[in-house]
Image (cartoon, rainbow, N blue to C red; front, top):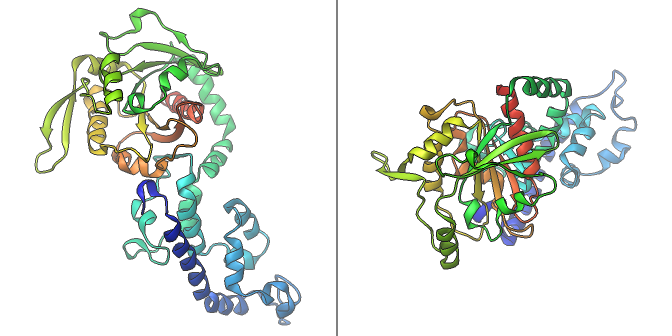
Length: 381
């Protein structure tokens, strides 16, 4: 597997070849099952009159499966509702694993309820991870952003009630601590773009919103919702600019190194007192990850720093975390959000989280991520 989960051209052609060969292996199984089912008492086909003369029976099964690979999963589900034959046909495990392996690098977001196991994503097409049978159709539909949005849209009344109750209970706008290497390593500043965005309508807050000089509070408004972001940088601006110009990693002054975890080569960090105070007063966290695939990333250090910020002694575990998986420009190659979630070990967090693909120069994806974390904060109020 290439960096960022993308398949090189040669490997992808082998992948396609394995798909076709795998479909051919299903021919006898499908022909035997279809011919043994769906017949009426007079021997005619209950699904489709004409029997062996129908176009469906004239077309080889492996060719039918191959044609289905060009459909979208949404079209495939619609096809499965037409009759019993297609209902059985479109649930093939190999077909849905193909869709899963093909499409997951293009997904724009993933959350704590939908993250596929890494063993599933890294297994070969014709083998089951750890020897276990998986329902790839269920995994795909649970994980795909489009189907997740469709499920959320089925509960519009609940969302309206949540928004109404949130407006009654919350005394002020929710506050989020924003931190992470994506704030400093990208060639375009996400924060600067946010400050000049007409969609967010930022209002610079008064000096008193600063907490012991760490970060600064800026109030934004997205549609009818106002929220405050406390931006936490690792060093001063001059030090960050120098490190970016020299392409060196600056020392993060928000964290204090506690050495290595006992028995393992994992760094352990604690927070400086000022940042601890920030963590105690915020309603959620926004982590800005650098998702540019051409750069090197120290994910082990990032995981340790996230764990320090999520210390249960610093506040309730129900506070959500939004991860903005950032690249500088739309054409930049990115690490898929599914792999970002696994690299940051987000499945080990005991809180709600979501990874959202974001572009710093255009702010693409930012409003979707902010809308999610505002909704999660509203549920907890």
